[in-house]
Image 1 (cartoon, rainbow, N blue to C red):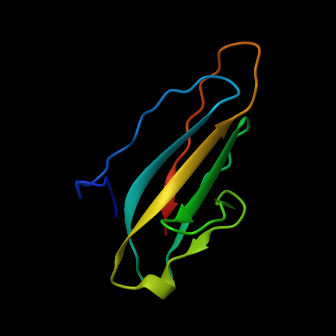
Image 2: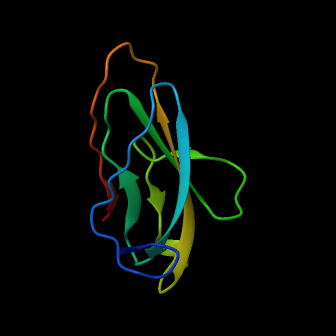
Length: 99
């Protein structure tokens, strides 16, 4: 399950961002044995994540984060979404996935 920082269950999150920009936000993730945090791959976007307090971002489109070491915990993860520079308005959808 995915929660906001007030521990409210998250349904689909909708956000807008400008071309050639970056947004960051934090969410709480329920960690279970054998589960991974990942994202769909979407052209024009990079989806990075890191456990709160960690220094390095991980591109979770290509390298899912194993949640097994944190079994039974609700861990805060920071997310960084990077949009490519484009000349015309585009709309992209992506999913954060715990499976």
